[in-house]
Length: 160
Image (cartoon, rainbow, N blue to C red; front, side):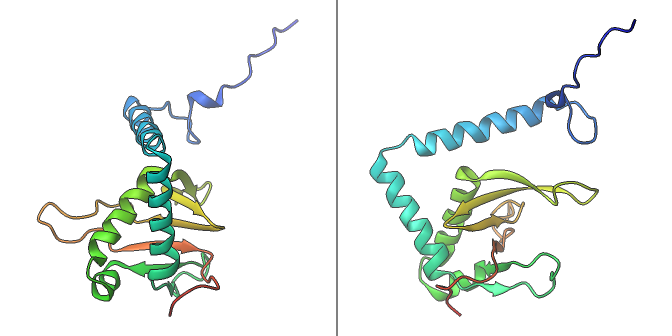
């Protein structure tokens, strides 16, 4: 008689059968600690920052449909448009990207396959927002992250 096998422990391996590396675990713990600290602030501060984030993403930003990716319909807003449209636009863009990176969750897209990548995705009022996976600026100060993406591609309150 054979002995029953122990169930496969999916938590110990990723989808490719690799053991998680310590740097992955450390990065996850840092992200979770930063997110907890952000939400642990005074309730008025958190509410004010969430209102500012919603204002920037839903009211002030101009969204353009990504025609080059019809298989993944979404829109994007450009950093240069923010900088051109209002005086503190670039600082607002940087703050928005940093805030999304702190309070959002990590999601893999597509869910599996050779082209799957991890993104930092914020779910807000029925929409998904995710910035590029690059630093905000290069070391010399030039822009590196130049856009924020959004799904669904069109919302009723969009500015054109």
